[in-house]
Amino acid sequence: MPRLLIVKTGDAFPEVIEQYGDFEALFRQALAEDGFVAEVFDARHEPLPDLAEVDGLIVTGSHAMVSDAEPWSEALKPWLVAARERNLAMLGVCYGHQLMAAAFGGESGYHPAGRESGTHGVSLTESGREDPLLGTLPRHFSAQLTHAQSVLKAPSGSVVLARNDHDAHQALRYGPRQWSVQFHPEFTPEVMRAYLTRQVDKLRDQGQDAHALMRRVIDTPEARSLLVRFAQAVTPAS
Image (cartoon, rainbow, N blue to C red; front, side, top):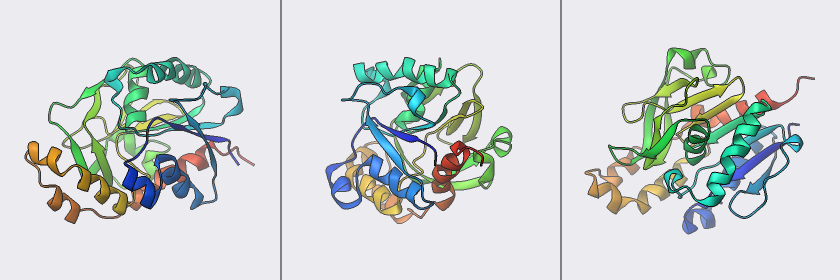
């Protein structure tokens, strides 16, 4: 089994944690569907682990903002660069996506069109269709999304693997085994609806109807499958 490490960068809302589990629990549940297990490192409160003890990293989402440059977040950047230099397998999700892009020379910040929340369509680029990880997905698939910030400028040398009408950088590849996605493969429909319930006022302020978005929430098995596929890619060949 690969030595997987979940890099925890934040907490979900209290009611989400109570009913469904925190971010790391959601990842663990998805990975457990195919028998994979993962340790957890809380980047906000724990010292940086030794990369030699890890086969693959999964960097979670957060309610923090990458552009706020909190000390714990900034400390992760050179660590992630070192992980890429070791060709360690990595998968960043939402905040993790934005943080990896910023660490590798891109730019992350508030999206000029505002927040994207709910179940939305995502499309693979031609490069995405040929990618060893995302290329297993349909050309067009649904994913759970909730973010106010985005990757505004992809790092030099990275490859855009997926996009949609809201976000030109829904998925990026930074090297042969380093990926990140803006969407949440670990979210279930119930978790997505709980997030939309929290965002009613914020979405109304930007002209969106959270209740209508709730009615359009569906299961997203294709996006969810990325977590197990990533773990399989990290598993050493027997």
